[in-house]
Image 1: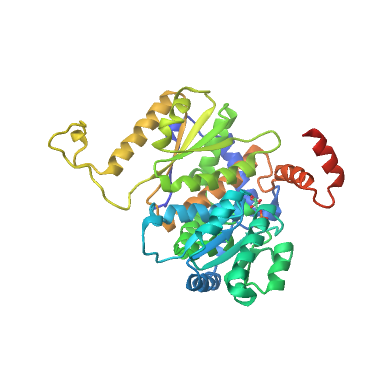
Image 2: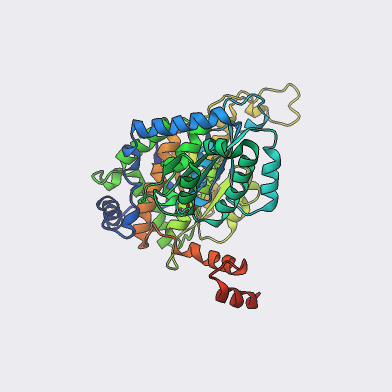
Length: 443
Ligand code: PA5
């Protein structure tokens, strides 16, 4: 039984032969390495290539950080941030911060913004806790994490001295290139390598995601095992009609070609909010180029039915929705009968909250379909490591197939550079003198 169930029956899409052939060919290209961006296909067979030795090395390093620090600051942005953040949020108790006893260090994030207040408040918040850091950057030159790391490195060195700092800081970066690699070598930090052929947004199952996740107490073996199942279930020799990633890619491309330009990923589990953030980066950076691509948006339900619900129901009819549905809640809470029934809710007495949530999900689905918003449903059995691992690979594979169907290179992100040039020019970075003059004149 597959960990993922996909239902496109309410998307209005009929999968035709032509689209099936395009998806089959796209999947074949991902496996043969003959498509665009083929330098970055290391993620395709990544789950099954992770061996016990690699897991053991990550877990051993995680154990060292766990022994030393109550708070581990994980520094990175984009693909070097969102995967770990998504899985930690999904696996954590929603009120972790209120629990007095922490079995695991708290993993907090930095370098995903340049907010002075965020930085100040982070330093203040960790003042009374022992700390360590994981600094993650594939290029080793990204400005946001580099700034955060400079500050956090100084804080760690001030507290523990340089020698001990080198046991509290772990770098995850390229094997040879970039400022972070040089710095890590000079300072003697333990270092994990991001494979050359795995791009940032496809890197959650490398040490980029696995190390912070192991520190946070996530069962990374189960996460990888879930991904391995989906790797097998979407392999090159799997017929397209049985390949759920291919079917999802087909449905979303068919909807896009019919004028549905925005895909909203929704879930009725607030813990999955960052899975949607990770998904937005995966699809946004992979497909949004050459003047094309579905705009990836997200909602957390039912909360957003009271904010975005009106628009989804009756706004521009260019939307479709993909719902991550969770079959089983982990815990049981029921609505009790109330003798006075002043709130009129006795019709729900005895029902589990998850049952009510499911009816909300089904009711909203039909309402949105009636309003002209096609609906795709991706179901996982539960929010656990294995299911989340499967979901990660399901979306990654679908993204690769989808990008090739769309006719873009899903593995580059040339557009990300534009803002950097302007920012460096505005900050008078050496080498940007000409751009500096020009851009300042435009302000
Ligand atoms: O998917 C990508 O490649 C990007 O989002 C990167 O992950 C992001 O820009 C961070 O890059 P780096 O890891 O080089 O600091």
